[in-house]
Amino acid sequence: MDKAIVTAWLALNERLCPRCGRPLEVHKTDSVTDYHAATVTCTAIDALDQIQAEWRKGPEGQADKAARKNGLDPDRARWWITYTDAEGPPT
Image (cartoon, rainbow, N blue to C red):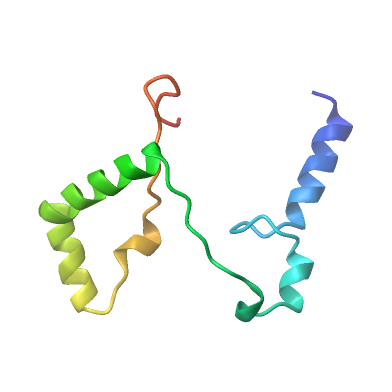
């Protein structure tokens, strides 16, 4: 790939919020009330809901429950994802 393109891409990404992808400049003047939340459902999210429900019933979920009683939020450090057999798990 052309080095200039890579350099430009990296420079662009340095100016984007790593969480939402919006320009960091936007966050200097925005507030929570500027945003709306919505949900999107699909079969991948339905699968994720089922997996998370099973997780909560298992030993990991019980450990999460205990951590929450101590004021911790285990979900903050966990990134749930979905993938299909055709896509394969992320590497």
